[in-house]
Length: 72
Image (tube, rainbow, N blue to C red; front, side, top):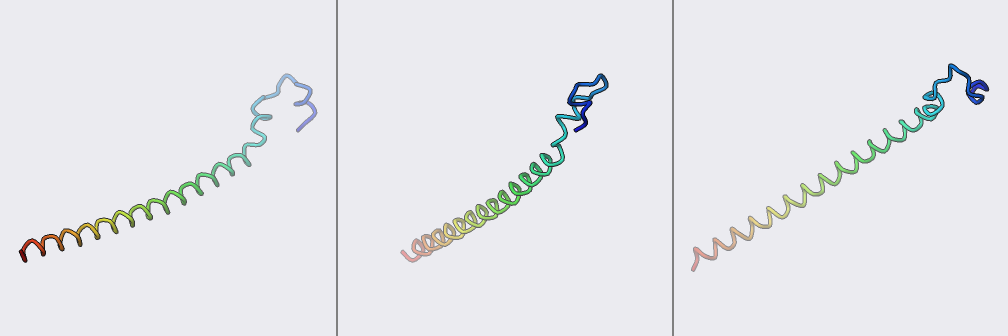
């Protein structure tokens, strides 16, 4: 930072001081969003797989039940 900014010169733009960390903060935010998106994609796939597995088991039980009903 320049000494004029620290002393508060007249043409000082306050955004230059507050945004000094902007690139690193933005990079951290981008990394966090990417990590969250990856996590959510994995969870979505896990939930979809579990739902398919439950549906398959339900169909097997239904077919077994219907088969038993036709035998009786």
